[in-house]
Image (tube, rainbow, N blue to C red):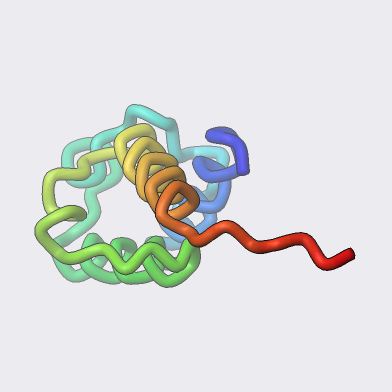
Length: 93
């Protein structure tokens, strides 16, 4: 999954929670200062991102995230970690 695909999915999640158009959400827009999201919306977005990408993140990992770009970086890093930790699947002949 590419960074652009991840950012697009995160923007969709934000849009669903906040009713802000996906086109109005910039990668660097601060969730609180620019998008006027409240703490309940931030919690819902964090849970939805975690569930959507099956990351198993804790609240402490999501708390410092303030924009789409940072969220995408976290998702990419977590997906890479999961892939590296996944056991090798033997090919069946």
